[in-house]
Image 1 (tube, rainbow, N blue to C red):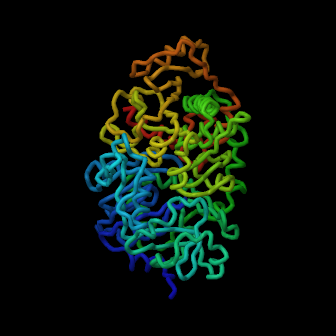
Image 2 (cartoon, rainbow, N blue to C red):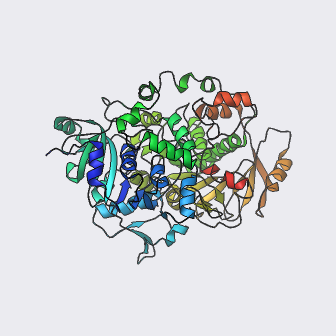
Image 3 (spheres, helix red, strand yellow):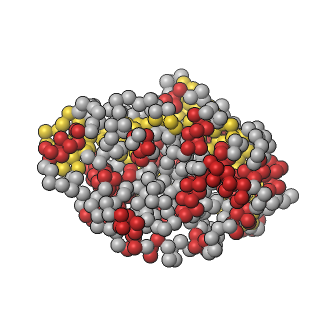
Length: 586
């Protein structure tokens, strides 16, 4: 019997008030289904719960409309094109309108997988030493290690490349969370796909079937159903891929920060309308442009062809110094796997990868399942689809965060955060009573990597004596790179290097400059290294990030305007390393 249903009918039949909905991350999220749920329940109070590694983008509308009363997640806020806190979540949590349960990316996946496997819990190496260790769903095992209690959603929402009418679902790489949410859900999976294919097509590509039809409640054809995200065709070259719609995302992020404007947009663009109407509202030619991103887009921009020559920003100095520290640690410890978190941290990792010394190399990884990829110029978002075809391996979250990061002697982590203390503990969850963004995969990396380099701006409210919340433990944090200095963090903080500031200051003066804004008492190496910021490194960074989402404002406003696409917000600040900036500047 065919499982194919129109999108609106599938949601009407399957989604009931009080349900817990798992939003599957398979690089893309089930955004067409999320929009349809907004249409279905707008103006009511269905008391839905969301379970998701990232509650972002279209999910803002669910929370804004009062449709959600509980969130279980590793990240809440804006992630595209950069990671930032969002006032919708901050206010909802502050007012207790929405109950929040915070996890790391891997542990949330482990809980769902345990449910799929019929197990009461899963052991984990994450969370120990963090505030999440005290979550109700964490148990202490007889050997003293931790376990996380199984979590079964009522319904799993999935958007994928294709399916047949029996509900066999084909995924394209990278695979993110994979199929476990669908297999754990009490009522199976609600699936939308780019296209319906034949049973014969499925059998020819059975290696990409991740959800068998027995777990699928319905299949709905929704072209561009991941929009405003993109969809890879890796493994299915005859499928038409499309890239992320950053112009829409920037406009949406700005609109959603104004409650009245956001309500107006939802009621005029979603409520009482269809997925086809939503696509028709996009600017003429936008969908074709997204499906052919290399034709006349960023590769033709002045910022890509001619990176500006302005003096390095603090963010650029930080990234250059961090890339050099990565090279030092890879050379000394022979690390083979490198996972860098969002923001200046990942640009430092990219810069290292592009200039790897001969004999010293480490495969770049991204937690959704990208291994040994080569970052492409012109687009700084870490999960951009242009990077996917460069991977030596495309896999999933469990493999990257559960295995490759912690492989003995192989894994080096580079992490940004809102705050760091003198013990190397990191916080990106709660600052001064305000929710920031959460862990994402940071806790998992910090818990198991052979070593972690922290990248945090040097500001009194960023480098602090005590954290109110520990997102990631500092036991493996051996280096801290700021815009002024490099610190060895173990056994106690010691300034071991200073960063060229583009001035005539000599090393002793740079040391004094670095200690000026430091809240800790630190030792100083008798011969601190001078980390120079080379012009070619800066130009490479600017080619990676011509929109300057992460690299900060340039001194000359005309150059800044040229570096930012007319469809991008010049105020998009960038990464977890920036998420506390508003608070820090109060």
